[in-house]
Image 1 (cartoon, rainbow, N blue to C red):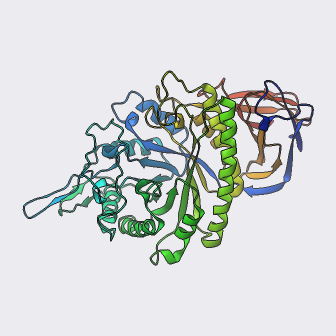
Image 2: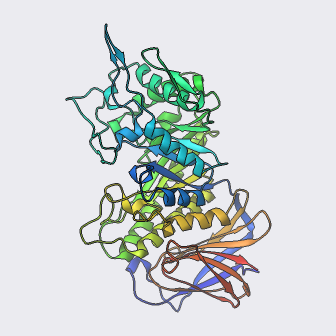
Image 3: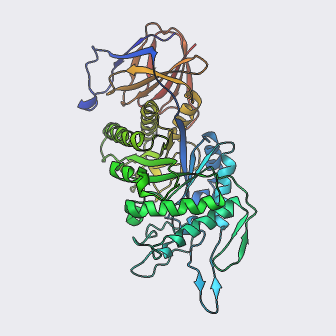
Length: 497
């Protein structure tokens, strides 16, 4: 059995002053198995952004999809995104409608291949679909813009304009009605009255409206609410059972949340099913331990923002649910691209996974419904250090393995119990499974070995993701005594025998 008190002592190389403590004063982890904080309702999941390494002709595609299948879970999020206009926008050219011609550019060649691959790799779970990028031609532009013909080219200049050319939003809502109808109703009728047959009859459980709109097109909350109302109504015409996720904020703007959740700011009967927002730690370039320490501090600030948003949500719309559907970290030398002669260190992938485990654990106690690790596949030029797979091979990194370990260890209905410790070194959260098994999630925040002594813990197992396991399946150790060694940055699950 696990002890009510676990004593933890740290040793090895010195670290930041913030994380230094007297080794002669062991860290104590207090666990009260009788004080249940919450029965877990939080799903550990992920997001997948559509990009060229996932195309049919890519050498990494098969491995990426296999890696995705390892962590398929409810609320897995799929996002075709603006740096790839031809992958993300099925109607990338404006219709030509005049007295002699009516021509549209609808083309689902790439959209179909990528979405269907995603769905086939994530069977038997629910999905959040977000074709987040609106066609540029629907916005008022200062000058004509042309996108690259090569689908592999990253185009950060797409997503122009801050004012819709149709202020009634009908043009935009019609676009999404047709797009969704293509997938759920076997096709649609275009702007010229021509029918386009797809043969698809998919169930779309959840649809998210736009992405980080306060940054992309700089959409104020008034216009966002107008778009949300129009698009949800249009989609419900063709897919009446679909639920909707709103906001998808890059920030944690409490005022924006409050304005969105106020029914007075929406048309009658507009569904406010879910809200979503994102978090990435962005440390400055320093030592590995400094970057990890900064990221844990940023995570704590984020958690404070979540608590503020939760107060607003519970007050204004308690039935509305929450997904943090982008959660990640960025190596300062490998955020968007990779600096010359730089390789992202093995330790990064492990402590980055530890950030996810730490935040997931805290959000589970707060009762957040879904927490999505971001993102499945990144590569140089497109957030390589946010990737959950090795961009050379498509095989898992330690970030993906941490998610997989959490998914297999902590499930809906498990009881999270009162756990406290000195969080400067190790995060601990104890829980009891629905089958009655006692477990503890441990996250080593330091680049040094941590010795954990549990005087009443005389047997069990420890499953560990660390630098030595890397992207391979986690290591399982048998614990025969009362001392547990946590390797640097390790994420571990202890289970009683």
